[in-house]
Length: 467
Image 1: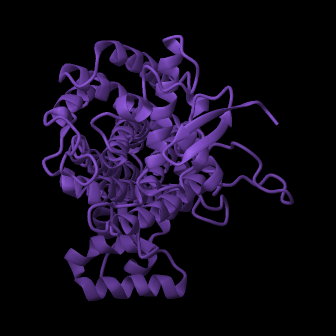
Image 2: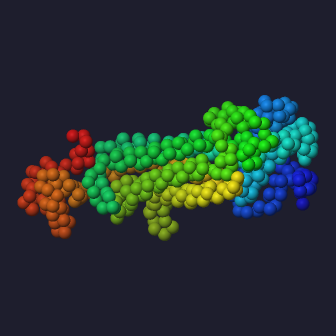
Image 3: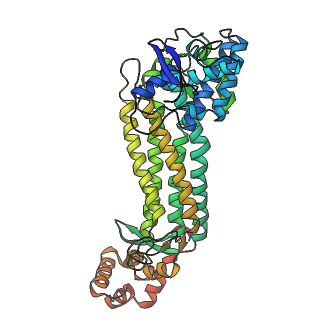
């Protein structure tokens, strides 16, 4: 057995690995919650947020006269190490623990206290000069501290990770839309042929959906900027300085560059997580737009000879272990699987958010985990799709032109001249007899060859507003 040291909490002594910075409550959680492998306070965004919270709390308590400058200096130095990532190995706890996130909060308190005492030349577990509860956790409860971590981590991941990744993909697609503008293709509704449309307009439609749904994610940020600081256990602020929440939020805003501020209703901030649920729902909306785009590309690239085959995808890897030469739309498949997973994450978040009983919602860790997972998956999938699919997307112009020439829905251009019913009869005759639309139109006696050529111009049909 590796060497241990004895730590103490309110329930008594606990043996902790001698070389670890965590303490008794973290070790109890490790012992009692060996559930799954998904680590919550192992992930960089959460650990960073915990460090930011404890640093801001120490600065606020010092400013308000609640903590000595000497203790605050030790706490902030240790918290800076947590923020920087040098102590990530000291955060081992999993998602499925106490629903308030108390053990993850105490994990941070213990690590920072032990590291602070180590910096002061004192042994691990001494609780002097810095105590995890009395000093690192001063002015806080896990009930308000962990929601702050939820908001901090989510905002930073949306702004710093998701938005850049999705924006890069939309910019690639916008460039493709401009390049494809001269190409006219068959439009399709109900998976059936429809009137012509510019290929650039199709791609620009994907860009617009991505723009709209990404804006839907960023519009949830103001709700996340409101922090539960100062609420303590049930929202009344017991044991916190009356100005602690406002001052600590100011320090967090300065540290992150985000407009964080104290919430206007502390009770609501503990018992419900509507801002997190709103962000999750918006992420689901973004996932839906990306799924629509990926599925469209997969259909346009189908075949390549027995399907539509109008788009050509990069040939990244062999697609079959038995069929030589097969290439599959794997980036489309990966992105759509991510979208499915994000939909599932959001269902769990929505349900968890509905379960806030009385003064506390006790589903905080799973809400945070699912939201951060959705952000990370969408960011990674968007980057992968951009790099390995969107940038190499090509149009098979010959195939597109052939399909356009065969389209019976070009008959729509005849309707203003001969009426809907006569035009429909021509299209149905061409389909049933296996002739071209032009042949059927001339054979009907309703249209001359010259009239057909004058009226049925796919490029003009696809761009009616241009003249």
